[in-house]
Length: 265
Image 1 (cartoon, rainbow, N blue to C red):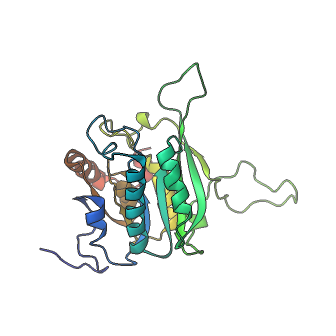
Image 2 (cartoon, rainbow, N blue to C red):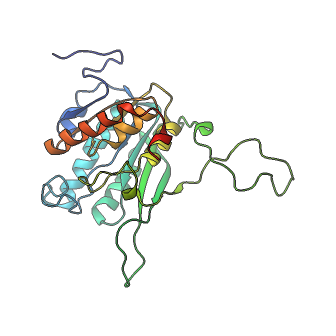
Image 3 (tube, one colour):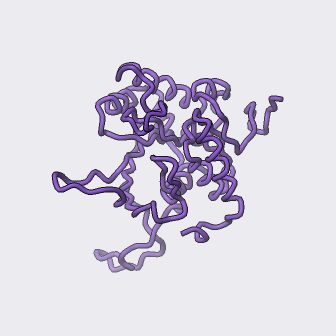
């Protein structure tokens, strides 16, 4: 039975739905979510032949699909809130999609977060590519940013120019170094593109308030859902792969017992 919850959305909050992203997004009302945080397929063959990252016949077909789901995300996103899309510049197709994003008039490019990590192999033939991008677009020109919720400890205690002591931490730069997540509890070996929970929580804290609603239309391993729970936000989202659905739901449920970030660091 379809029920309308307190947000006017015809689906249960804090659930991951087994669905195609476009079919799922079209069921959501306009201006109903506070943050879109998602990690789409990159079209570079990460799926190991399963199809979710190699289902398009051409770059053009892939880019058109990306633009379609992106516009649906923008439609359901509230004004002055953020669309955050994980991506890569490794392929021409995703680069062209990034350029297309910049041309959508209803959103404004505000930043790009660079996640730097040290896990994976190395090569003697070139510098190892060990980073990913999270592109941040606001719906409109203005956007919510909770600076005090994401401050970090300063390396110095006083302003070297004025001599005055700092009374609070500083807002980080957009380059975030988070080392090998394969050695921490937030990593799951059954999904090849798992995102780090610390990184996701910082994004969510910066661009939403407590009890806000976070949408991820490519749930994958369920990391966005977990990060939302750990920061006291609601979430909704979908995932097409039935195997990932089963595993991600189980993984998200395992975090019901966790109340603080320190318990799994």
